[in-house]
Length: 338
Figure (cartoon, rainbow, N blue to C red):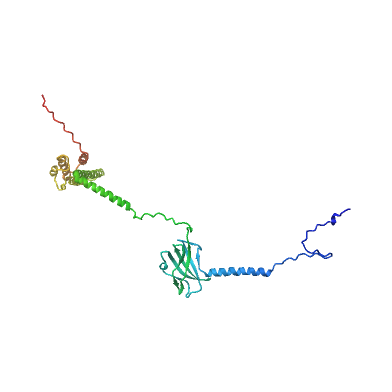
């Protein structure tokens, strides 16, 4: 028995139910068409809800930035329906509204195209809700204004404070304190030396210092006179300057007024600071006698004579600056010669 493959058909399994009648056309299941009216209704409801929320957000106060932390400078914006007057109004001294936990930097009532608003610039120093004082501006009163301040620390974290900074001091305070202490110690040391017999040595040291200072000044004057002599200054003018400078030097060295002394008086001059009795006096008498003869003589002083005086003056000053050390005395023989 032959079976034709073209007549074979595979039918999908049918659901349980009454079998279709023979000779009737099978019906397709009806599809459910979406309701277009219901979808538009839900969409319009969402738009109205978002618009109402935006309008409510514009009418309620908000901060810029939205999250305000402790110590941040922020702005509180409060929408206002209207206020009398033209333009904006600003509080002249907003710091009066501040507290230890709240600084108010600026309070201004602005009028814009979208509506009026109150702007408060502030800085809060405590976390949590912070209430503002009652603010009245341009006849409008704002009694209940508050913001929420966030903390950088988490709720479980404890604040760790830095160690206290050292107190500020004026620049130079350390130098003044330690310099005063050093000066006080030096003064006490000098006082101890003076009371314990060091006064004589200290006076001798001061006298030696004064003597060297006068010698250095006189050597500088001698170099200045020699430089003028080489430039051709008149001998009489140079001798006048030489006599004046040398007499001033001798006045400081001996403690006497040598400006009005004659050459003979200068030859008998005593020097209390000299280690010997009077080693300078014989030279001084001869030197000033020659100097006065050249100064007041009828004839013009020759350059050789002036140069010789300058050389003798320099040799005398160098000898004063570096005196020869005294030779130790040799003991005399005990027995005489045979």
